[in-house]
Amino acid sequence: MTVADGVTLPLWLVAAGAVLAVWSIIDRMLVPSVRWFVRRRLNRVIEDLNTRLQFQIPRLARTRRQVLIDRLTYDPEVLEAIDHQASATGTPRDVLLAEAARYAREIVPSFNAYAYFRVGHYVARQVIRLLYRVRLGSTNEDALSAIDPNSSIVFVINHRSNMDYLILAYMVVNRSALSYAVGEWARIWPLQTLIRTLGAYFVRRGSGNALYRKVLARYVQFATAGGIAQAVFPEGGLSRDGRLRTPKLGLIKYMVSEFDPDGERDLVFVPVGINYDRVLEDRSLIRTLDPDAVRRSRGFIVRTLLAWVGHNVWLMLSGRWYRFGYACLNFGPPLSMRTYVRDHDVEFGSGDAGAREEALEALGARLLDTVARCIPVTPVAIVATVFAENPTKAMSELEVKARSQRLIEALEHRHAYVHVPRADRDYAVTVGLRMLTLRHLVTMSEGLYRASDGASGLLAYYANSIEHFGPGDSERPAGT
Image (cartoon, rainbow, N blue to C red; front, side, top):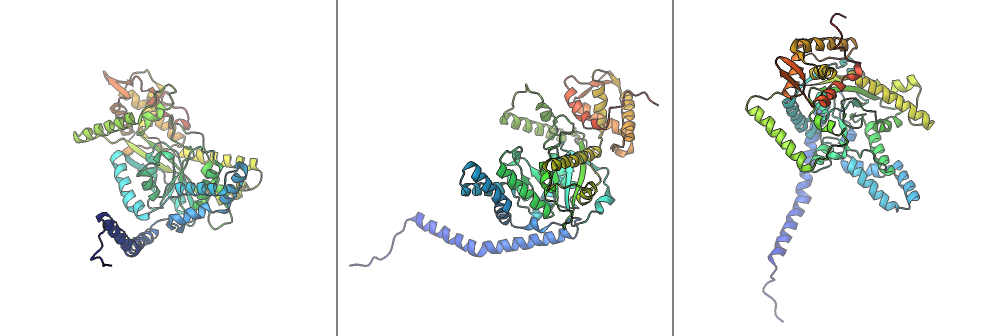
């Protein structure tokens, strides 16, 4: 019997062994050290932020995502819903438990304070300032400052554009980090990872799955009870015609149904109104109202978007580009649920189901009415109303300004906040008229302005954003 001088191994096997050895060293030695270093720096960022924010980042937002997923999956109410569905449908309990875990992973965010305040805020600021002149109208600063810092804050905002997310977060960055409910449209890689990192959670609109709704409800209730500042759009989606939509109160229902007025935290709703001189999605939103409109392919949408970006870049390079006007935001008076529940003697989590729904509808109507009264009146909305009321009339610049001035007076008389840049009404009308002519929604010929052919839909869209303040008074004779 002879002893071999050596053992020959294939090169691929040696390489695989080397890779596994290196990975073991990294996993056992380097990864824990890196995680500790990153978490230590992140905790320092949070500690620094909590000394400056009005509403501190709560512990729940700093909890590891997997812990929250497990807590949500094995929540007693979720397990009860699993048992009920298993009995009703005959589906094995283990299958439903795995389904609940999948829903939890889909919903639960992975908030990163550094990404939110350092990276996200910087990007949002650059994008917003590039596109708009952002203005803060009514702040109700005294009322906002008087809110107990231990409260759970929910900003209730009308939904005009997908830019709403960025602008509200940008405007409250010195108060708190915000958590949003985002629709399924954003569940594409890598956007969904970024959105989760910024603290948002995904919602399936109109889902009829009882187990999914229970998992979502429990997450919203965890977040509310844990003090995470949230922002909700009670309309449930973007306004298609410029008007406020009928409220959908699912998320608000989840929040108030578990609210205890004698508990540790108050629940405070802060109404917010937002409006734009130009909504980036306006044409596509109006198009959804046309039942005969041909469905656009993704390729067409991408080509259109690239062409739009290219056109605006060319305008910038040639010095002929204007920002998209003003984006204005108002804060309304906060509504304390502790005070509301006691003053109205209502219970959202117990008692007769019909009475609970009636109380919820009353609360939703009050919140949406307050949001409506907060919506700012922008220069484009004023001038668009003048042309929407006179779709075929040719008007001189002097007549347009006179009608606009009367409309401004009427709106201010109704206590609407009218954004008048430079405190100059004449300049405000000039800005609005210039924006509409640059977009070819209004044309000028021989010194007279008139609404362009085919522009009635867009003019009505911007006029409708302030329609709830009452009928326009641009036709009223001067001095009456």
